[in-house]
Length: 358
Image 1 (cartoon, rainbow, N blue to C red):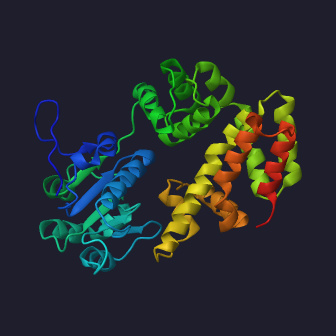
Image 2: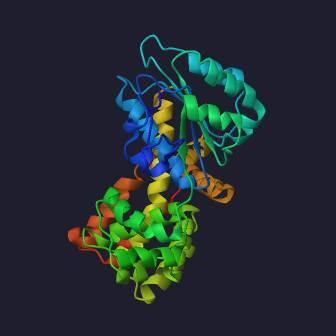
Image 3: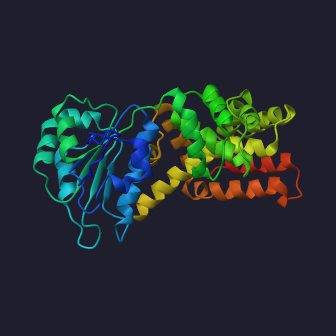
């Protein structure tokens, strides 16, 4: 069941912050006695995704096999189907289950009373995980989950606290960002934690072990050069080689450093590689999910980016998409001295590799 948490005054708190849960999920959930319902709610998509991933990792760490997790990500399931999943026990795999309903606001509206009854009278050892944009504190469902389940609050952070979060977050990428650089990044990018995280990943690649400075942020993030690099990548992944080369020419003519160009491409290509990996892992475990579902699982949920990213993976093909990380590593080493070829030629070869049909 969910473990009790306390606030600074020593009183039992009704919810746990997403940041606290993601850092130490085992402090808030007893994986051997799961709560009947876990609600992951709030207006920051990045924190909701981080909380789901932390819960999955905790659950998988207690299992002999990578099993026992069912995810509904792009459709509202029937409650009867969800209930059956919760009570099904594998003969050879996990003895408890996580059933995750992503974007579950409609699911809750249609099944509120049934979910309340599930909390009052749990069946089996499974836990229903609901990812929600909102969950009002004055509802009976909220109060029941507070008493018998777990509430994970994914409220967006204030602009004033985001810089401090970036300083800590940099450790995930084995990097260090100076406080004034983090504040500059927030000024440039805004308060979207997902967008800030992508920029931090890009800066970490560019910094290559050095502390990220204000000068690096000014050079790499939020500029017309970043936009041009993204348009170059989109062109290459769409098979528009001539257009991609034109964008590359404009970047190099403006004095952009080749390794910075790669850093600007890295975050988008890593997301495609991650989604492809999720797709292949699901298929290997006997679950048929779509590329669209895989993209949602890594946090790409806006229709425009979903459609574009799905098209890019499909054009690359599953086999070539699996090689993206290797291709980037190869180019990174080549640009840093492992190759005698001119940097422009190396970048052109990379774009042509992306442009080819699968």
